[in-house]
Image (cartoon, rainbow, N blue to C red):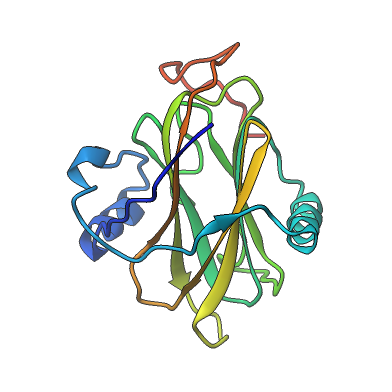
Length: 203
């Protein structure tokens, strides 16, 4: 895996509202967005044993899936934080569009409504041998407060072809999405490609 120095941008409230309303996974080309600036998360590092245990426990509890690329988000209150991933095919995976044609899936989305948890987790993954080559961008959005005070600290775990890193950040409701990490996957897929029609069974 080749790591890319993070570049940040703010899509703006209007663009975000359009995505929510349309529930589509189309996103403006990255080249049109990278010149903009916004918040960004903290530096990366190898996950501590305690952090890895926390991610593992919460992911197992929710039945999260894993693969060649897996990106997970945790925080520790009732607020609704959302994990967003821009795929190499320049599509956005988020709660309004949890599946992409390049086989990515948001399979765990917590504190969005109904049952909430003080130990939430969210998860995006590509099945083994199907994650496309190319650039991925990981973002976190503070979508709603559910009675707990801000700011809300969070941690993101990124696992790409067995290489795992963690990233930390803090967000308050009303702030723009925060770019956490960008990376380039260079491994070759054995079974699929980014141009395949989406065949993944959402069940």
